[in-house]
Length: 224
Image (tube, rainbow, N blue to C red):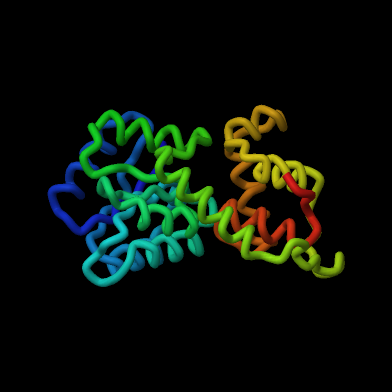
C-alpha cells in the first residue's frame, strides 16, 4: 500500500482527491490538510513512511513549496505531485525545480488521478509537453548564462560514491526513469529510490536537476 497525504485548502477538491485515493486498491490515504501549518504538523508527527505527497501550491498561510521542502527533509524518498489548474504552468515549473515529479490538474477524472499516483511510483513523471518545453527553455537559458567551463571542485571535496550509486547517477543524468534504471541495473524500483535518496544526501540536493548539476560541477559526471 502506498501512503498518500493530500494538502489542499478547498474542501470539495480535498474531499474529491481523498475519495479517489480511498477507492483505489494499492493506495492508502494517511492524512489530509488545508494549510501549510497543518501539513507540517502532520509531517512532524507521522509515525509511518510517507510515499506520496499531493499538494496545492496556493495555500491560505503560505506556499505549497514550503510543504514540499518540509516533506523532503522528513522523508527524502517521498514522491511529490502538485495539484494545479490549467494555465498555471509557471507555478508548476517552480515546483518541479523544487523536487516535484509531476502534477495533477484539479479537474482530472478520478481514474486519471489514481493512475497518475501509481505511475509515479513506477518511475513515471507526468509532465505536459508545454511544461517540458518551459523546463528545457529555462535550463537552456541557465546553460547559456553559465561559464563555458564550470569550475570543478578538487576530488577531495567530492563525496565518495559506491559503484552502484555512480551507475544510478549516470543513468539519472541521461534521463532514465526509476523503472528503467531498475531494469538496467537488475534491481528493484525501491532499491533505486534508496540509491537516489543517498545520492541526494551526499550531494546536498533536492531534485534530479540539482543532482546532475552538482555532480558535474564536482567532476563526478561527464557531459551527457
